[in-house]
Length: 312
Figure 1 (cartoon, rainbow, N blue to C red):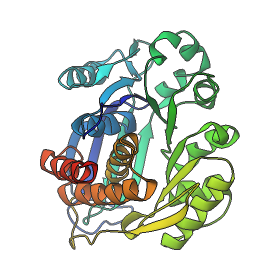
Figure 2: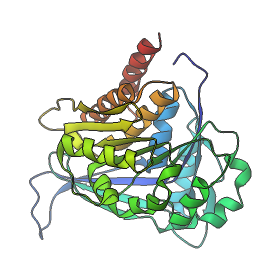
Figure 3: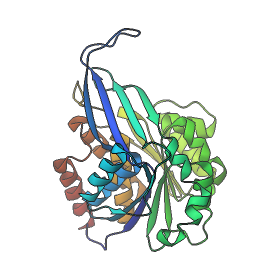
Figure 4: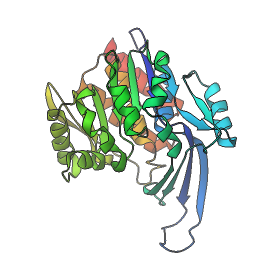
């Protein structure tokens, strides 16, 4: 990408994702035929995978259970170029999981998150692993961490650039007391509404939410609005990037947000403006929806080419 690769430590979710996609229009309260897929997932892993494919040096810190799912997700991680950092296997709790139930068009009906193991990534855990936190250009943390763990990381005096990724409206409020410590916050419009205490809809609403969050003390805020696109706010002002037209039937919208986040972070780490980074992120999210696979090599090669063209 034209510059020395950034060293980025991704901190958060590492588990298996399961998708159940309805074969026909869903019928509430009834048995629905589905097709099931099973793939490595978790926000931290998805973003780390994207960053690796875009030329960054990446570490991943998380926690898994000492069980079949934990062993197999660690085996998968060993096949990647991602550096495992302070990943412990816990024999008292199961590995996290996420199950997405999708309608026939690939839209999320409900997401089921069994992630109590991440509550153990708390302040005490990080106080015992301070050495592994040093030497990175940036940390990318997701809100699957408990509030005490997030606060500990945000309060470190010598912390690097800090990217925070929301994982749900319920968990975004964990960051409410520490938003002034964040360099960049990436949220969707529902999460932004929960954090600001205002109901926002559409691309205009995303821009207003980004503005409100920036004015609350975050250095840079990005708010996605699904297929409508995304908005941003930083010291240069605010703006919106309209969405990319999608096929009538997408493969899956699950994972589009992580694709957006990974590409945005890679672009920002290469010195791109917020507006340019969001343009790439919106395009990456659209590619993920079209392919149904956030690690499709062809998709990331296209993003890589476009980042390289800007870097000269």
